[in-house]
Image 1 (cartoon, helix red, strand yellow):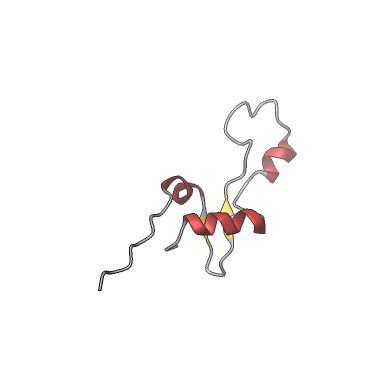
Image 2 (cartoon, rainbow, N blue to C red):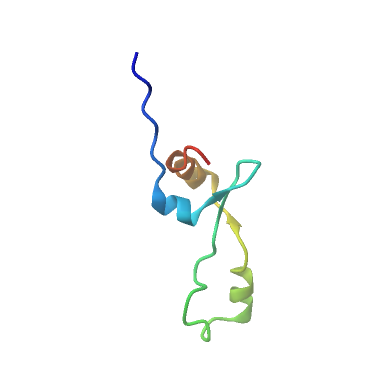
Length: 68
């Protein structure tokens, strides 16, 4: 009997998302890479740290990361 084929991890998703111990998907904040002088201190502060991905998108990301 043949072994079941393994699923491949989406390498782009692997670099962008982390799954927590409780199963939540975390992402980096957008709009924090360049042209920061024209952005307010408040917007830059809110873009700090990891953010939780919305449940609808998290479902799709978890399919791309089968072994995480």
